Length: 247
Image (cartoon, rainbow, N blue to C red; front, top):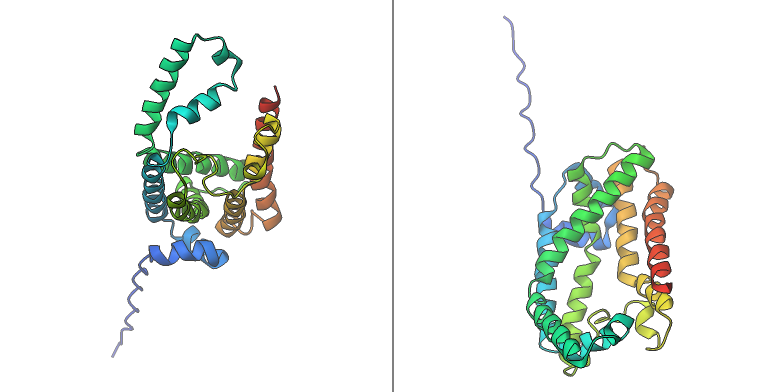
């Protein structure tokens, strides 16, 4: 009598633990990015960073004297010096009103746009230079998690801001994590541009991106190649920024 052998039922796919991925990307990146490359996800890190950045923007608005800050920045421009006092006041008032309103939503706008743009750059670079054949969705999942050190920076900013007095905040350096924060106010512009690029949190992001894209296709993207591409693109951007500031 013929017997039939029943085939084992296929295993149900494991659910994605977004919370574990967020912590894993920061503190156990190799294993976590291998999981992300296999089953990409991006909503949790983007949403977390956007919420935190929005909270920082709201807190910043309670500490910023936008008029004084914008006037100080504008006075660095020769064009601004050619305006009459009335024109200067109108320009500063308009900009101060814009930034005092926009600071509440800058996180919600800047975070997803940044994630999309950096994903596009890395996705194109690794496919072009390494022939990795990455899907954009995979690259987006990796990049979104690689940017998570920004969430740590936002949390530190939320701790730091209440300690600041009104008008005593530099929105570009709420957390002193880059070289520019330690330069004097009369430092050359090119040096300030270079110093702002030497940022602890951004270097952490780039290291995570290199680890993540290596995990996405280990055969085509070796660790050395990943670090060369990520830090090479950053180097080109820094050189362009410093050269522009030096003009």
